[in-house]
Length: 458
Ligand SMILES: [Zn+2]
Ligand SMILES: [Zn+2]
Image (cartoon, rainbow, N blue to C red; front, side, top):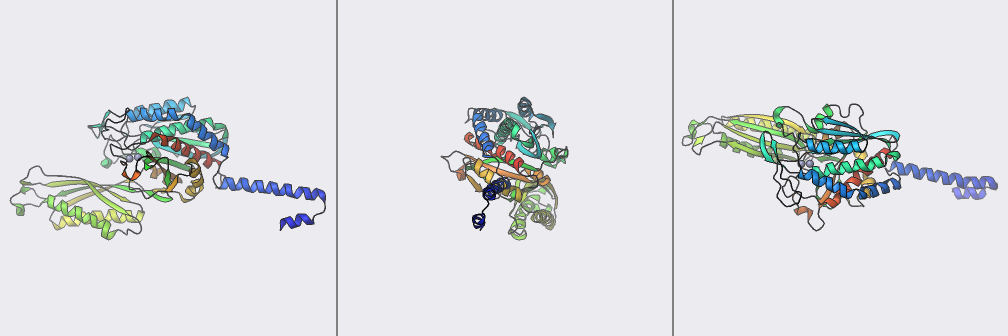
């Protein structure tokens, strides 16, 4: 249609002007479309790719150093010092001692713009590492007052190293950045090693937020990444509910102690606790609407009795409740209490049930996820897939509740192994193929520059 219009024009000057206007309009549309799709200038992504590759050796060395010196939640002193020194060397504004041992770095781009946060966790687990890797941990630490072996069995060593590298890459691109990047190095994602969850104290992400992490400047988005068994270098993610909510469960059954040969003179908390455990499974299978959200109740510890011929006075159990929906979570929590109390009552015993809210479901913001889809695809060279719901929980959920968040997974299983058979996170044989670390760094840096490149109203 428009071409026909040009043909009808006979003024040479106008004839020349129209295609120029059209060309300009096309360029403008392309530019707007590029920005709207979350794509930044390809040269910036190319720079990220080159810079990340150039510091890969350093990135792996950091990871190995942190792996060899793991520290439990709220005791990450060496790790935070390492991060602090690195961030100061890069010229960032640094805050330390956030939520006990956390470190926050602020990078201001050359141009004004929005703010975004990138998060890594720093803590290790009370797990003994087998002596397989040359940089295997031999470290011992204290967990809830007891001496334990310590291992980075959840990959937080990799997260920390990748975020240190991301900071280095983004500092080099400072002149091209419009806005601010907040680097969050968070302690105690796995919980505090100083006190038990039922102590009433807070830790990790929640404590960082309580201490005002987002108070001064609330970021417009927050991104996080977790390594897990999966195709090497593959980024997987999903929109909406991603990791489970987690509630700590603590049940004490009190009966009446007596002779094991004369149970009729006792109230047996052992047989009662067996009924309670079975009954709790019906909360999930018979009462929760599993079409809305899967749910899990696991009893992880049970302690009671000291002699074979004594019915003890009490049995103590602890466990966890996992869900992906607020309503299902409330129902499961409520029914857990009712079932345990009523079953105990029917046996003449008493159940004291405490349920402590630990972590919320991590919800990936739908719009942010959509905006970043093409960025993830480019960063992972097309190795991108839709993640299944994850049964583990993450305190990244607290950041994602405060501001739109996106939490993605990075596959770290060696290419010659089957990810389905690889040792899971928290297993002593959990293994990180370090060649995936450049992909993770590239992903975090690309998310940052692309997000800051979006128009402010997006
Ligand atoms: Zn973990
Ligand atoms: Zn973890």
